[in-house]
Length: 343
Ligand code: ADP
Ligand code: MG
Image 1 (cartoon, rainbow, N blue to C red):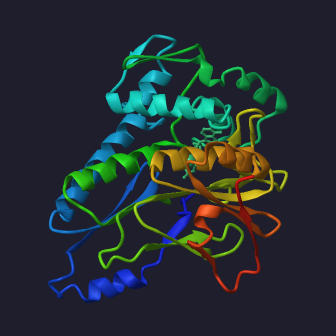
Image 2 (cartoon, rainbow, N blue to C red):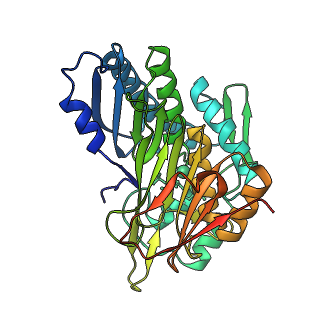
Image 3 (cartoon, rainbow, N blue to C red):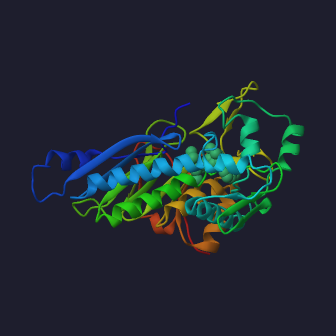
């Protein structure tokens, strides 16, 4: 199944910039489209060094993909997952991603868990051979899930027997941070990275205005609204992106609640996280989707290091105070907007 991006860009102003590209005061625009980490990606950047910076970033993303792919027999994660309990030496990048991933598992009390792989596999989300596993199968597979069963000592990973890792929920966010750093190190001060709906912006648009990002309507076509940002990451998770319809006629989405081994079904349709750090956004979008509305709000009130836009199946949008003036609902959408404040 093709993955649709959760956030699409509003291109009008960019087209205008392209049209004016012979104006020497406008910085030069460079752009690349490519497929990596099982999704379509685009990097657009401005400035003299943008072209070669993008090509360096693209190369690095492909490299990270080759380290973290669960299906590529030559990847580091494949080696770790087939190590039969032996410690396996990994790269600095993989060790860092695991460290971050485990930190987020603790912070979210296991709502996001990199050891969810055996359950994902049982539902067919890793192979696209979808099926509904029996309760007994899930019960026994849940014994193979638990981030406390992972050891990381220096750059060496050791998994307890039967444990397997999957970085699907954090890898793209991490890659967006690493890529943005490559662009910045090359002197790029205006760029937009779209790694399969994981958006990361550097600075503002070359004309100084904010980037305008469409937030997907999780129920219908197109966007439900537009978010204006600069120098921030924006990541959306939802079960409408990748799902299957079972023999029972029900739809099952690709985000699993590690507490039950079942695809999440809690009234949330999508969770969009807005913060400086793309990897934080990626981890939180998945985990707050698992938590559901009330716990997501609780989490925000406790940590306050991000903003969020939650869309529920009863046609409501809940957004945090920090983005209330940055998000505008499209006129033709009949949704009620609720602002979440500190208590
Ligand atoms: P996407 O990858 O579509 O942008 P997410 O960032 O929300 O969306 O990640 C979802 C992916 O993470 C799933 O496809 C699966 O590989 C993995 N996953 C699903 N549920 C969990 C979970 N509870 N914890 C960790 N990873 C998960
Ligand atoms: Mg995620």
